[in-house]
Image (cartoon, rainbow, N blue to C red):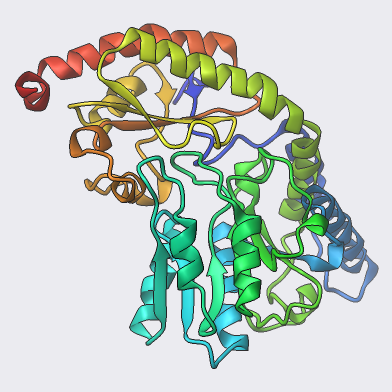
Length: 391
């Protein structure tokens, strides 16, 4: 068994611990109030009100109307639902525009659509991971059904100008969707003030809700074609029995995330900067990947050159330190991150990239421990690295 007291968890862009308040709120809906919210009898049917209370909390978190929120199972489902809806409601438009640094949920759907005859244009990035907006503008045309670009990158933390991209999409008569899985709960936004965003995906487990629950925002007036077809649930927009306990948990987690938004951008950001700056000072041949001026407050992506990220992670694990070498959805691949490759990060740096992502549960003593052990870990691995010895 893992000793939780000894775990230093710095992989919050992969998933987060469930907030204790959310766990407490969910518990009765597993044991006492376990009925089906779509049932006509009161024992189940009264849970429909609980579902709507959860929807209202998530809507408040997003700055949306409750009628614009559809519960899903995760961010991937939300992304697929948005993009496939657009190509279904705009059958005469055969093109979608995404970026080269999207999450695999969007990149792989793009490949699937290409196999079905759609054209997919991918917006490139520069060496800091910043989107080429001139290329984006040129790509978006009258044949484009939807532009889908993430709000914040899961690996580098880069924040992208989604409002500007949404306006480009609308100018061409296309819809605009953003994967806000990493942005939600870390940067402030209010969708009522962003009419250029037609659809937006979030996933509860990125802001201290359970895994297995997410939401898709569909702006009022946007024609939507359901991805999951069957029953009447979610006003006919997403079939399947309502996941009442998780909807409750997501609602509570959304309220907490909104309440702690300032902390994310002050205390958590300060911890992230402290970790980054002390590692840069203590270890040679280290580089930061991404746009340090426009990124999430909790994320830093650091390359320890001339060594393998997987080896670094295994040595860190011996100290109970959890981080990532990229997206959790690509774990197991020996290829360097597609995000870093798109940025043109040198091979010797891309392979040694580690993403540290903090949360409001992160503590100063954890940062101190990481800074204490990392120089020794890197030195030990470099001592046996053929790349380090040849540099």
